[in-house]
Length: 301
Image 1 (cartoon, one colour):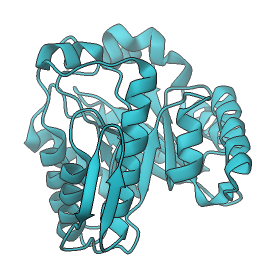
Image 2 (cartoon, rainbow, N blue to C red):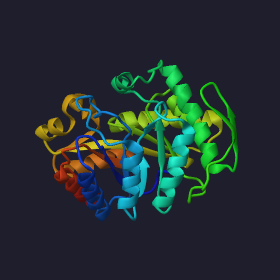
Image 3 (cartoon, rainbow, N blue to C red):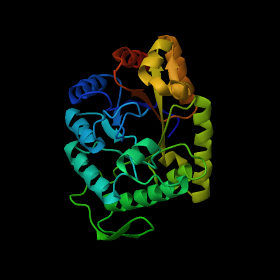
Image 4 (cartoon, rainbow, N blue to C red):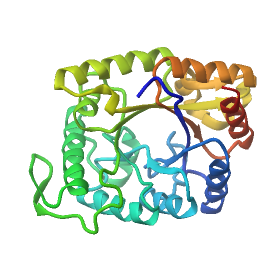
């Protein structure tokens, strides 16, 4: 999907915040040069320092009902937290609530502290990726076919239906993660979109090349897959620490910093790396100045 101006979005973390604050943020975003808003799926804050987090499906629903124009996405639901039939039926309903603007993202899950706190088995990486692949196959069938049969190691569907059907004929399915051997192969075979957070432009370009090689091996046209990246925006070091706390050093490679001119340069580097979509990742307390800075940078492209 390269060769055209990328789509810009905002990824909003529903931790340490309120519904009213999120709705205010979403409406500000929709007034700007953004065409996408997404939320995440956690039980705790992403860095594990707080248990204050709004439930993902409910907040995705609120997003759908609080906006009128933007795509309403999830980056990403953890395949290990819900049966695929549960998530498919929820997404079909959200598609109706949004008038056909719902996108579904799925991932294998990584936050072991959440699995442990809630007594959910945190299986080895290979098993979590097996769960992800089976979940995506089940969800695709439920959202796109009249009836679905599936007999896997983790999930079974027997003449299963998801009704009412989504508004969209093919509700977009995203997969999140950067694992080059397995995750990107699952993307190549099954996904409409791919998302990876907080990587440098060079790392993004490398992983995109790996994805394209997987596409070649499975006979898939890589232009069918929208490639996206989540980036932070921190005009200063103080802003970086305030937004990301304990994860500041981990996310630093994927955070845009500095003046508007430097932000524009950073966005252009991701564009040159092949990003079809660039999302500003925002965490509470939301820095509206960062949102305005990215909006201005987009206008300057």
